[in-house]
Length: 300
Image 1 (cartoon, rainbow, N blue to C red):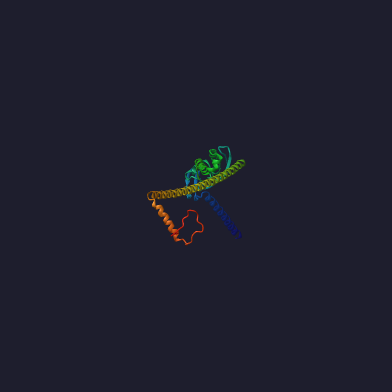
Image 2 (cartoon, rainbow, N blue to C red):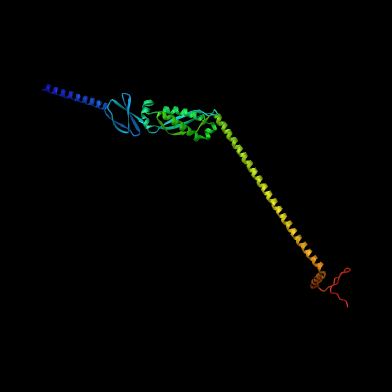
């Protein structure tokens, strides 16, 4: 009886082990042949069959048989940092700059990028090489001073050329951030010296302009004062001339009157004697010179 029950227990144990192994095998097979896949937002799925691209899946759920493979490529914005891009200006001044290029893969170029350039969508190495090349070709068109003074134009030239270059790799340039240009220490020293000299020249020019302005002001004041003196002198002369003309005219009128009527002079003399008589105090003068008249002295 005990042996019978032992055989039943061994049978049940063997059956449980077989069931567990079977379940494990089923799980492994199901995981291998799982047809359900998902394409995350902002990506595209490249479907390959035995290494050959047979389609591009959009975002969302996709069902694939086990003999097909799904590779995910990002089409959202990515960033490539280019540190110390080197170039030379048209006047042979070495220059370098650091740039940050933001880009994304064209959605309709995903298959081409996967086939030719990257199975994971990473184009940073191509961005680095293309940016270095474009920076050299653009800076060679400008002199060192123009590179600084025309920076917006330089940036626009780099952006335009890089867009055309990266389009070959299926990448779209979103933006370029460019830091300050760095020149050699000797050139920067020469620039600093030139700036100082220019500032000194401007200061001297400003001082000269100030002196010239002050001199013009002094001349204007002197001319105004001279004009005022001349005007006063002309006015005084005119006034004196007018008075003299009036006096001469008065004398002429008096002379004409005397010439026409000689009794006028005698009348004037009488008028004068009458005015003197009004103020006479009745006293005779103590000293009388010869021929002097004695007023109101009547001798009987």
